[in-house]
Length: 423
Image (cartoon, rainbow, N blue to C red; front, side):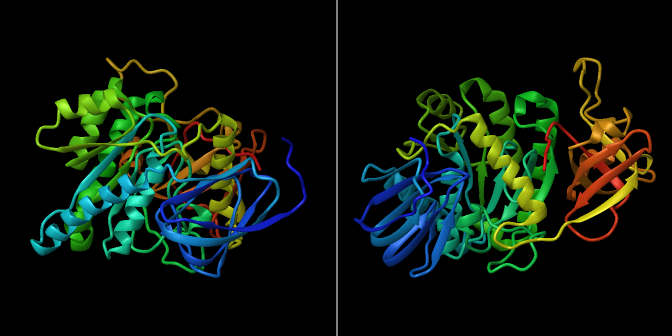
């Protein structure tokens, strides 16, 4: 059905245990207000009598107690109410983890480190969001680890990150604002970011495993230095992984010292994980009935929006800064296009193909100064921030660079991958 410009208004009541499943396109929006009762989006409670605006998303509004909801929108791609929900299972999982966190707090011990596994579009990120939001409600501050580079959490696509969750999520921006986002209503999130540069682990498995392992070192160090994070544990989101990815899963479990594995809806993967439990708790939960397949064009639109909002903001409008720099002033590394893993240990090589090579690339800026820095230094550094090369002139050897803050781009080692952006 083609979308109409006509505004649709209405109100309805969710009974306890029901959820309203909504799909809204990027050209449309839905405005929601909860006037009575309790309703939440992926674990984050919606305040009564405040309006929330959603666009380009597929969400479920769940009510544990019953709620009255006002809404207005154009024609929605899909919306319906269902009482067949996996939320009771997810709530029980949260309560199980909460008991472990409480025991860790009493005994000054380590909280649960939870790995969420499943196939594509099974709701892994939604469950991770719910578990983090519920933990935060109980005064815990789990470390959310995003190992899915397809969609950056508190960063742009192509990145892996680890972020302490010390406040509620901003449901309208899904994850919420980072420290680059200027003044916000909620506490800004402060992620540690490692650059991978591809969408799927299999595109450069050695580089992915290396960066995930390096991120685990930073995460584990953060937990050692922060008692609250240590006792709250981790919630680790992953890309689509199955039983054939057992070796990679084993590496992630070892790197992050995982002790609870949650498998969504994949019986074969659950059985394989249970066989190799080695003292770890392996649990299987149902895939939410609200999960839908996301077309590639929808994912591309989400990626484009994430990059755009990094520079320009969302509801909080930002003012990025454009500068022009010499191509020769930038020291940029990327994964080699061809590499014999048996004889070539290089994970990164210097980009020397001319300025035009960098046009429309998203650039990860490291903390390492370009003067005297090496490829290994760039690889081992966390990301300081991101820049976008909007134009490149091979004749003049000039680059037009968009950054999130005023001033010239720092002369630091930079990394690129296959992530592109077009304004």
